[in-house]
Image 1 (cartoon, one colour):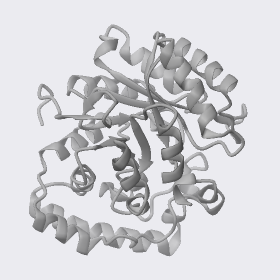
Image 2 (cartoon, helix red, strand yellow; image 1 turned 60 degrees about the vertical axis):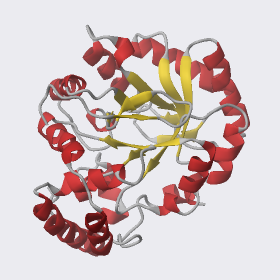
Image 3 (tube, rainbow, N blue to C red; image 1 turned 90 degrees about the vertical axis):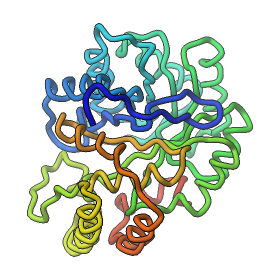
Length: 337
């Protein structure tokens, strides 16, 4: 895809904004995947904007505010109104980066947005969402607080992240929900059972993160690759021992299909997620321009019915070895209950 062409667009649900058909997840530019190059991160955001990507996804706890400051710097001199900024909040972290739980109480929700607006140097965010369900705060209270922020003009749309079907319905009863952000890839398909049907019933779109399963489906992963202690994947079950060997074998089966399409493994993996419905917007977590260019090429990959059947046979639902998070984190995911 040339840098002057624009990705197709998709709506975020029946009430949300229209965004580019691919979004850029910015987390890895500040956190979770080891050191990142700030200049290259900004250049990657610029390249995404120039290619027509309009949806930038972040969280106020990514690098404890660093990611929002980075996005502000990248948007300097750009037309803010041509971009949709999606922000997650609620995760609590100590100065050493350790996770302390969640707080999505109304006061914490409004305070968090105040700091987000200051870091982004903007007067509104386009989608604001709790990062996870706070077990101590009814979802109705959290959504009600964000609804106040919508009424006051500080937030345009309300989203959710990693919640189950019942929580989706309870939240939507308080205020329209634009989209649910949730992990979705060939290796992570648990949402298909109940969460995705509920979202569609309610007119809620899906912003799919982890479409390359943290790099496993990138086609570039090496079994011998060393991971630092600051890299989330060093603790991820799917990247451990025989689990990793099994999962990379699945990738090789996908590589054969990609080769027949004249595409990369990553492009086919992204295209598969996009092909699951016009209500799904994949988020790609590219940290470098060459990875972004590859991801954008997924928009040129058309998967036929025969292609989809071949992909399903190569990487069937439930075929991944290991959960997507460690056991303690999986137990806290409302979307997995």
